[in-house]
Length: 206
Ligand SMILES: CC(C)(COP(=O)(O)OP(=O)(O)OC[C@H]1O[C@@H](n2cnc3c(N)ncnc32)[C@H](O)[C@@H]1OP(=O)(O)O)[C@@H](O)C(=O)NCCC(=O)NCCS
Image (tube, rainbow, N blue to C red; front, side, top):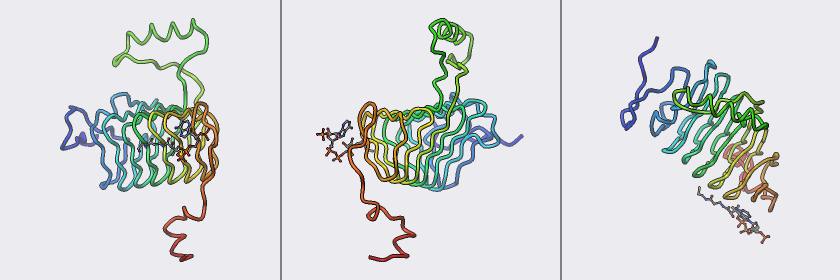
């Protein structure tokens, strides 16, 4: 058993779970982000180089859930509800109060929901764990997701795309596309050429 890992600056008296891997240059604001974490996967959360996970973020990860945050991802207080897989590509910017849910964890029939709510009372911490189908969420590199947005199960957002504030993303978004609204609809397409990666730019200088 390894030594419990604590963050020097932490206000919460918690530890970083053993199956969380983060680069030494990454920043985790507090161990409280793992308050609802239950992943038993070999690696339940992986945080890349230079990535930041700020206050207000929460990794609510079920036993089979896995989350990967790429290099230089900035998470400004987002909630991840994950029972399968959530992948966020390099250089993504995730704004305040964004919710990623790869599962609803809730039956559609009222009786089933009622039972689930009653069972939550005997759990510590009290929470809903309904067993619903989960579908992976994949966010490509360089995506920007505006505040208060929600990404629903099974959605893929292509690289370089932008999601407007307060959007509900229920369907896949192609690369280099701006979507907004509830449900999120395409509002315009971005110029792929002006969004080349650093590697591409050095290969094809302007
Ligand atoms: C998505 C966004 C980038 C689009 O900016 P834009 O390309 O300048 O878009 P426009 O203002 O020209 O709007 C284009 C159309 O989309 C609509 N629209 C823009 N943002 C929208 C949003 N968040 N929700 C719903 N509709 C939106 C506009 O009303 C307009 O509709 P119309 O053509 O019917 O008049 C911007 O509106 C936005 O939401 N930014 C998020 C900011 C944010 O979250 N910042 C946090 C800091 S990390």
